[in-house]
Length: 414
Ligand code: PMP
Image (cartoon, rainbow, N blue to C red):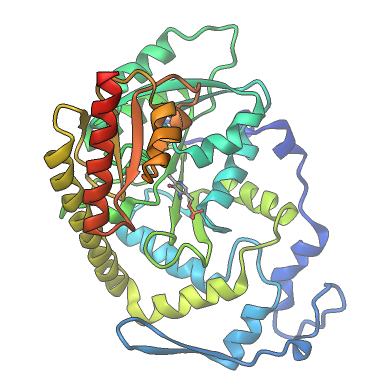
């Protein structure tokens, strides 16, 4: 264990060049008692035509955002997020992950926002990044134009295979820069729907220590695990300060409110705050206040209860999908049963490249799925496809898989 004190070696040139915004630095000072502010560029709140807000939860509970809170919600606020919401999220992290050091949080416009800022903070053009294969397309969409070397690490039904990671690190081509980071979705990998076991996580963390890289733990499906016991996070085992953890309310509260957050060592999170100052100033105050209002009513216990109900909903949808898959796709496709989340990763048998089948023939038959190559960092040809069982009804899932089976039979026969 070596606690990281100086993160300079991990930072991109662009990040090092980012300087705090002079105006943003004044923001926390405005709230000091007795302060007369002639400094900032705050619009006068009396010109905002909104007073307060009431809304109803699906269980019938009525909630109100008071005039006072609304005034704060409608104004510019701290870059890292509303202090009360940060405090609430800190408590959640402490209860759930029991972090081993004093961490910081920066709230983003969804986790994609803080994730992309972390990439920008760490990576120079030409750098190498360790990345699971297959990987979340949203991360690839940001990374692809950065002219990086993707060192893709094979996964199986239990996520990243540590031996493959070790092999890549041991046999490193020294003409390429050593990787500063690994990007992974450890629970319900998007697209695979399966997670990394605790034993594997421990080994992967050891490798991060040995080869000195940061773990970017993108975990929006963490609370959608189907087992009673959630698999502990990398963040919970981090003793060095080498994990940045990304959480999101998108799958449990609302994706439209765009609230996600990064937790991790202060120097790195503070740098993401710098990137936010220069990017979007801060996440929507209204969205943060709205989320805080619900979370305060629930408390951490209520939040966990809601998360459990949400996970149970997706588990039921998973079971429905698997039932139809077994009815129609046996012998035509293979899959690992998802352990969390809303995706399943199907390997089409007797097909080398799923692209034409899925992008053309399936669409003609009115079935939408995502061809596997989209999730491969190096765009490999692949027989895989990603299906989601989230929004389709039982009948629709059954019909879609029936159509897919008929397409596969035709393709194999031709
Ligand atoms: N990471 C992964 C793995 C995702 O699946 C998603 C959402 N599709 C995101 C990040 C982005 O989430 P958010 O809505 O919080 O930006």
